[in-house]
Image (tube, rainbow, N blue to C red; front, side, top):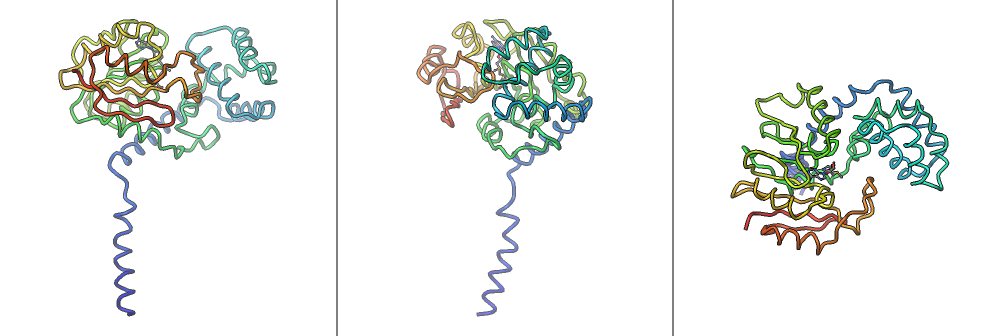
Length: 312
Ligand SMILES: C[S@@+](CC[C@H](N)C(=O)[O-])C[C@H]1O[C@@H](n2cnc3c(N)ncnc32)[C@H](O)[C@@H]1O
């Protein structure tokens, strides 16, 4: 009997590491997030000022969503679009009429936010906590997304509507040997992405590969040559010329290539950009069919539609 217990114990001890082992994708994602977080922490201008500001704002406004909303909009307005302080304050008051915070925002607050854009953007994206020591969060959404995107060795990956780029930059670190194209239509964002890539060259170009930022138009991503994997994350509903844009995206896809949609539906009320353009399930599926794309994989998680599509 005693012998049997020992045997079971020994088997358990040897099996433990096998059961608790991460997949290679989980390991690569963790490494990518760790590297990206340290690089963004390295850009922080004056952490004490930032912490003081966050504490002061929190005393006036306890609702985390309202706080994030103001930080998100103030950051984008000032850093990317260079909008004047009074405009930012007016919009904050209009968007959150119940909150006392818009009234107490100072010009110097906006400067502190803007100086720490990269770190705050990572926190707003949910990759790190918003408070020191800005630890990585345990959210598994990103892992689910990467499993669905399923980048293959040797593929050229295009992210259309990259925005401020955290998602695409992290993805490019998970796949350090793949070529990437970050595609945006808005000139201030194109400039921002190019600058960020340039200021972190050592991080993104450890291996020999290419990451390019390409400015597209409203109807064409202007990619130049065919690519293998195109990602539209939280972007499809932002296209002003949806059908034209999707058919030119399809033209940029290699015959065997894949288009991935990660699309929050109109029933999803979580996203911070407060976007009222979101689409319903039927409209997205109809648009995909109209562009002669076949859906090879589909899932719906928390009102976010995941589609993997091929050319018909
Ligand atoms: C909500 S952001 C998504 C950012 C990023 N993909 C993410 O998931 O965090 C949508 C982006 O799509 C961009 N966009 C809209 N129309 C576009 C077009 N025709 N070509 C490229 N980007 C476009 C917008 O400028 C905006 O930055």
